[in-house]
Length: 213
Ligand code: T5A
Image 1: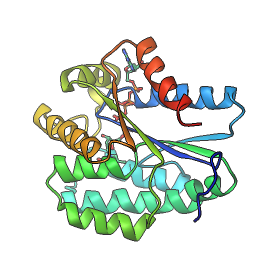
Image 2: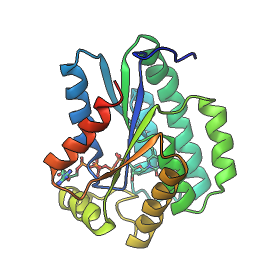
Image 3: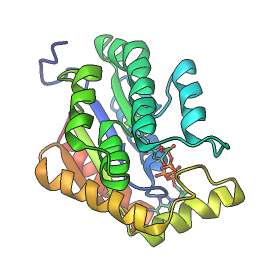
Image 4: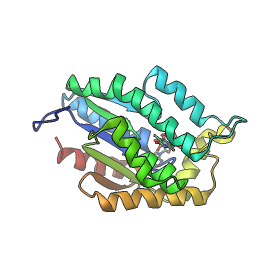
């Protein structure tokens, strides 16, 4: 798919550990774009379409059957393939900006850095599923693990999903993995101090958006 032109539809993703504030910031980005008369579609991964949301349920629920890191990775990319084909690519082709709560950077961080899945294999799957399509801009909401987990667990309580139930060391590896990705791709991945209060986070986000439209 060609993505030319200064006002061509953009693909923006939000990343970070649990409780970093991705859903909150997705709403802020959506409202800001709408105020600037830019058509926007908010979505999330895993999920985003009815079929992909069914895969989300499989991968997040704490059931009795074990899911290996490799199986988990395949499910993430299966959901992503459905989402790309049925929502992300059609929306971009219609000229809508797509704001997606998590994308392949989450697989790199959670399955790669967190679970130890082979990084080269993840890149091969990424190429097979989305070819050269990658986000135009990724907002990485960086927050200390203790802060993120306190926010996320404060909200979900005893209904924590398979990831929220992980130990802190897992999230430290995920956070470090995200920061390594940002250091490798500083033009695409913009790190935001998400431990700051919401007004300050919003200010950082809007400053990035202003330089981007
Ligand atoms: N996953 C996903 C993978 O392992 N691999 C993959 O490839 C993909 C795509 C589901 C899980 O799937 C895994 C990662 C995840 O574990 P998810 O649905 O995005 O992903 O789930 P969570 O990350 O768990 O989403 P959360 O809703 O917990 O986190 P958010 O969206 O980052 O946080 P948000 O905005 O809901 O905020 C949480 C709370 O904090 C408050 C909010 O009001 C809310 O109460 N808050 C703040 N409070 C103070 N100051 C701020 N700056 C705040 N920002 C938000």
